[in-house]
Amino acid sequence: MFFSPWYFLLLCLLPLVVWRLFAPRRKSAVRFSSVNLARQLTPTLRQRLMWLPGALTTAAVLAMIVGLAQPREGREQTVTDSEGIAIEMVVDRSGSMQAMDFQVDGEHVDRLTAIKNVAGKFVAGGDKLKGRFSDLVGLITFAGYADGETPPTLDHAFLVSQLNNTQIVNNRSEDGTAIGDAISLAVEKLNALDARQKEKVQSKIVILLTDGENNAGQLDPIQAAELAETMGIKVYTIGVGTKGQAPMPVEDPFTGQQTIQWVPVSIDEETLTKVATITGGQYFRATDTDSLEKIYNEIDQLEKTNVEAHHFVDYRELAIQPYAAAGFSVPPVLLIAFILLAARLLLQQTWLREMT
Image (tube, rainbow, N blue to C red; front, side, top):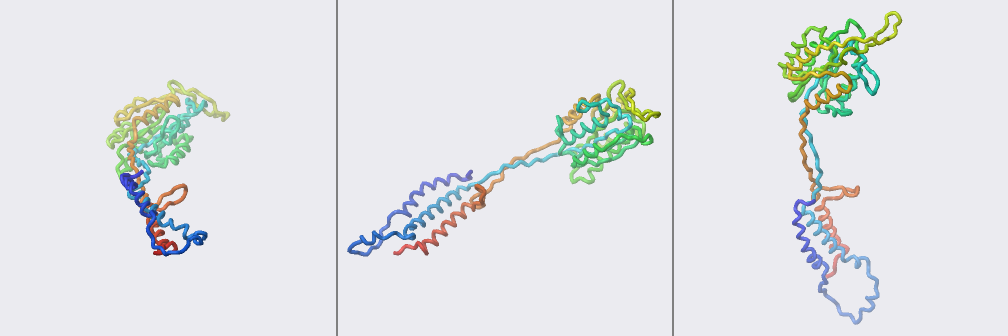
């Protein structure tokens, strides 16, 4: 494209330039009795190329007109500014998470395996979940006490690997459900972000998944929720487990073999609802893998990242900048005009100099 195409009107003068360069001119002559002998002579290469200076001048004028029209090559670019949010995923890994009341790809799995499958897609994207690519995401796991596995990070691949490495506790001394301590630790991790980020994170949320009741730790869940509310942190709570009874693998103390026993599902939905309400979040109940995925999708819609795209065109001025054509680097148009004029002057003053 051209920024000043009106300069192409100068092409109307090009025929005049050509006529001026190639029109026959009156030359001095010497009288001979006969020129028949001269006509039989074969023209030399120099004589055959006497038109070349005029052609070079014409091409130079044409290149200068093109240069005046300012040819440019535009490349459209998009710069995306995203204002991400900080998310702490808080995952229960207590012994009750062994209940086999969820399915993944048609196979019965324990609750933690189902959570790994869906939460991993929530972070990295997959199926109907788009992923949280612009967000800082951290991981906290808890049973009898809470562990900070990964601080909020943009390295989602590492976070998902840490999530997949999470195991259900197998030591009774570590078992339990410390919901209050887990929320408190999540609030602490999110609050510490402002000290290490250049800009303050505008939105911070906690997604808590548990299948039981608070029976361990030092802090009550309601107190932890009030702390989160003071810090402006939303807590979304998810109760995981089917309603009624769930199949639980139990090891026979005499044979060492695992058997399935049906145990009652006990989730403190009242407390989880209060925690969510106090902080401005929501409580959800996931009774199977599909409902868990729908819950994460709903949270995904509720907590959107602000993305602003700026479109602009980066122009390359071909009159003064080289450009690529057919795999070759072509000099700027005005440089081409200068080279043509220089070649014309050189030839006209040396090899193709006219005798006067």
